[in-house]
Structure formats: C-alpha cells, structure tokens
Image 1 (spheres, rainbow, N blue to C red):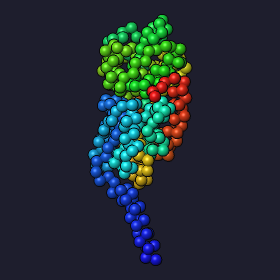
Image 2 (cartoon, rainbow, N blue to C red):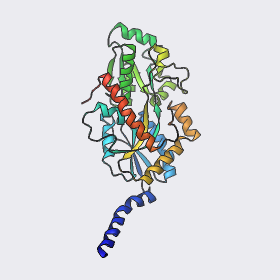
Image 3 (cartoon, rainbow, N blue to C red):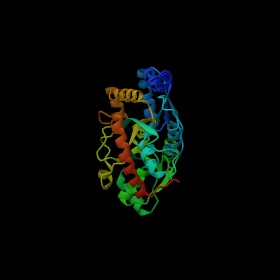
Image 4 (cartoon, rainbow, N blue to C red):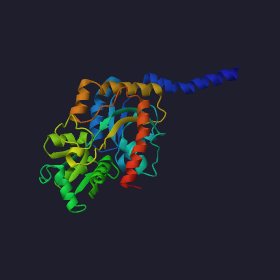
Length: 328
C-alpha cells in the first residue's frame, strides 16, 4: 500500500512540470527563431509580431535568425529544442512543405518534429525589375519577347535553390514556355542587391519584402503571381493578365511552429494571442496594405494549420517534381 502511494506521488511530480509550465508560462524571454536573413519577408513580419506579442505575454519575444540551407538550420535548431514554450519558429511553406520534397536527407521530420501553432497569412510573389537598370522592361510582353529571342538571355535571381522565389520563376517559365537563367543567392538581401545593380533581370520576390522597394520607386512591378490583383497593388495586373499565361498562384504561407510535444495550455494561449494580434484593425491594415499578405481565415486553429501543412507537402512535392529542382 505504501509503495503504491509513493509511486502515485512520484508520478504526479513527474507530470506536474508540464502543467506548471503551462500555468506559469511565460516566466522568461521567448525566442522566435527565423531561418532567413535580416530584411527578409519573414524577418520583417517576425519583428512586427514580436512587439505586441511581448506586451500581451509580459515577456520579451526575441527574434533570432539562424540562416542557411533554405531555412533548415533554423528548423533543425527548433526541432531539437525543448518543448517548453520558450522556443518557437517563424516557418514558411518553404521551410515546412517545399523543403520536405527538395531535401532528401533532412535531419528532422517537418510534421513529426513540430507542433503547428498558428498560420500568419498567405504571401504572394511579385515579378519585379530594376526601375533604373531595366528601362526596356516596362511590361511583361517585353520580358517575353527578350526571353524568347534567345534562351537564357533573361535571368532571375532568387533567395536560394528551391526557395519560393526560385519555384515561382520555374512555374512562370513553364507556363510561358521560356528558358530563363536562374541565379540563386543566399537570402533576400543578396537577390535584391543583384536586381538593383543590374546583375539579374527579374526577381519573383515575396510581396512583403517587395513592397518597400516598389513604393520607393527602386523596382517596377510587372505582375502579381496570384489569381486576383492585390489590394496593396491594385494597378499591377496578374500574371495571366500581363503575360497571357494561365492563371497562377505561387503564394506560400508564413506560420508559427514549436517543437513537438508543446504542452496544450501553452499551445492554446500562443494561438489565441497571435490570432488576437493579427486580427486587430491596425495589424490587419499593415498586412493587407503594407505587405500585400492575405490574413488567415478564422478561426485559424492549430488543427487547421496541421491540415494545411499536410496538404501543402503534397502540393509542393508535385511542383518540385515538375520543376526538376534539386539540392542534395
């Protein structure tokens, strides 16, 4: 009888930390890990989200970017972190759907080793050119004419092999029957610098990172890679309108994930606070008008995110297969 009582007490102490963490959480700073460089679309969003999230949680939310391998270095760090609510990942369809098909030997499983927390929005691609260096490309028809005149005469930069900015270019090339030259860079800053310097012709950039240079007049948007025009760029045609291709949707999502095994009270609190922040009028305006990002549909639960992830792993595996893109 005494042994049974001791065993029961020990079991309760072992189980208690998870609940205690959930009840007291957070009691120290939280790391929001990113997989891409400062200035990337993910970094812009993460820092914007971290400020109000720090206020409502009562602890600093610190953005820490560990870059490389298409986001896999950051993903691997989070996958191997303790599921205690103090390490989260700013993931994307690239890090958690595209990479699952692109990399054959990932050191983690994109589904089994993560807890989906909340979607943050759909991010379209925008075809842009340097306003200064490419005056001959005022519209998509001029790009098509140059590309069809000589194979690989027109180049496009990307944020890395297999990134959404790469696969958007691949999908455009297939749809328009073009042979474009792909020039990969390590992240957003390098690809944008290349475009502005005139080293590459096109950049199928993600909308959030593209909006600043567009509004500053540094780049000219020729088309949006989405089925409909964007509220933030109402005068920019879709790729179907501008280029005469079939309608395209190269959008990817941003999201928050945690290591597998995150206690449910922490999961629900984090999901609730994120949804409360991104649905405020101020934040929603920033998303739609400043970043051209479509907010996630309500109620945006972890379960819905898990279904989206599973569906997009299948979707992007087919895109990668058709593109022929490989990394390892």
